[in-house]
Length: 211
Image (cartoon, rainbow, N blue to C red):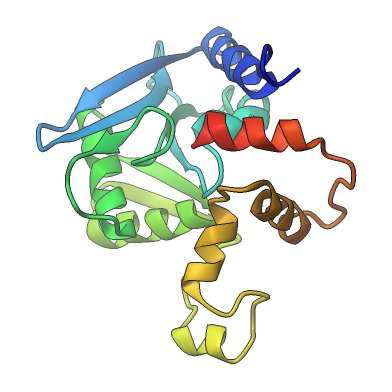
């Protein structure tokens, strides 16, 4: 089945359609330094609505992370939903890989869209980026919501066994799975009641499409 039909690719197609009919459009911004940023932006921003930037976490691009948030939020905010660098359609030739660099790229995209003030909500790794964004660009950010984000975490927390994984490298291998075994570990650690019967072909497909 996996050879002829990709469930994850089909969902990607559906999510692009859903974002579009919800009033968002896909944009690509060349930051001029070897970095390309993809972002979903309002087709017709309303001056009466505040701007809300949603920043996704590891393991999924912007569409997969925030599709269920569109319906309750889009009537109240002008939504801006970027793919972070190396997710979705965003990439760079620059050597930087930090959350500070990600924040600078997101700020540049928002400036290119003409957004001067905004609220920010980030999930997991996206919360780290949102925190850096607020710290670096105080003039742009009004309020910040950080979800499941350990911005106060220290290296000793890993050493003392606060988390199931002992090192950053081990955490990265699970949060960005490259094998079915690691994908199963990700499901086990991120769901309160993880699904027990996930077909191997689906996990392989997920890794391939979102890689």
